[in-house]
Length: 291
Length: 307
Image (cartoon, rainbow over all chains, first blue to last red; front, side, top):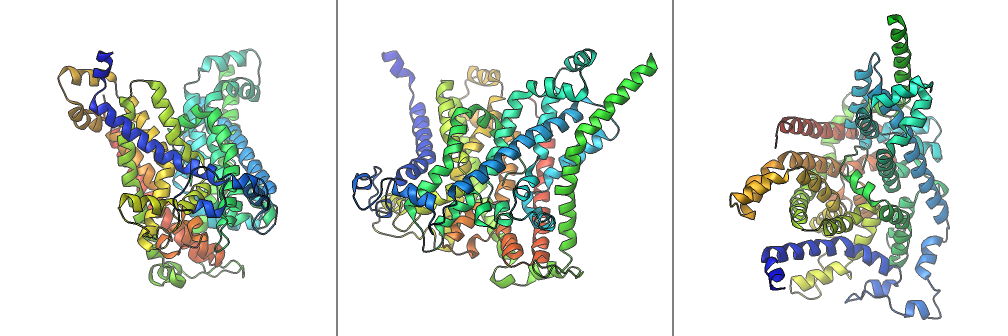
């Protein structure tokens, strides 16, 4: 016992204190969001702040149970587009992550496992687009999209993010290490080239596909700038745009805003806590299209 | 025989091209065309409503660099962007490096995994959610004033987190710092994990103290990672938009936090001045290209570091 205590040095105690302090800093605002979802504005901005929602919120007669969530869904001007906006965000994020995975793996496969004229040129051309930040081309993209009459459409919101150069790069790097013998064996067995891609390459790239899919889902779920340009009607707006409405000047409804933020975060929390290793793995690589 | 192999290879080559064409077409339309178009538009007086455009030469560039653009000049945006970038990425790099080094000292992988997960959680939230949480914390009656009063031994002082122009800039930095610290900790941990344990063992055998080991071994070996992560953090900070936009929507003044992306949005979309906004986009593009170039130079020159 004494021996064990002796092993814990002052240094280690300091390390633990600092690590826990950082931990409190990162998670307390999230806990704040969660508890504030069950408080009224008076309690959220009370001095001193109490971390436990008052029982009044749940019991008082004049206020509906879960009233913040009700207002979050109904909107601050009783325009209930919450579910539509949530659905829009889901449609955009899911579509873009699926197409990113498919197109990037197809292109990465072509670049990694085939020799053809102009291959290096194509690879360099695609890589060079990583240097073009989305923020620098959003105005001309907006003109392209409005020229094609795609303002206020899913097409306009989805198409600019169908695939990312980073995704192509990641898939290519992964497939370079893929044993060519498998591919040749399948060719001998008479599988067509698209068949090899669909039956051999895709099923054998699951980890990188998961990482890439999650990254691209998260980026679209987080996207505010492009929907601000393209989604102008209430029905086509996305969840980040919906949340900004609660902060508008002099209409701030703190409780409903936190409830709305909480609701909007649930899909990401579910993804994060079930697939955290892909998130943490994906963090270690850089995505140039992230804002 | 030889002829047959040749035709098989040619057949395969055809498929390689077919597989890469969809992406190539995509990038041609949605990356190359827009950046060329941005440059062309920046030389015209194109506006959103009229849909007419005339060639005006470098007029837009002269305008954005010399005129005050309705109270929000580009020079102010460049200042706001650079201050935000420097004020965010330096503390972030230092803090995440220290935290990552400390995490590596933990004896059990299980604890390290737990901390990593918890530090990363804010990065999962969308920027808008992050900004909305902190807006309430920064409220005059909010948690941040209470904590500041406690720490500074004052009572009832309002630190004007979202009102005072300096404090407002610090607030945006704090939000960004909070959101991305876990992300950069993980990047550093990846770098630290690639340093072979034998080096540390040798240092311990030689009687090197922890402090000494950190300065003389860990830090020099981590230089490539640090260089890469710094530039990455910088590039990300240069593109910031959501945090500033959200605080502006919440009633904070635009001027101190009018970063380049926000100015592009307001000039191009709200005011319909597509020509001027395109000129600003090109300026942003050139700034980022410069940073990317530095990044490439740094990562290339550091590749020859061997353990």
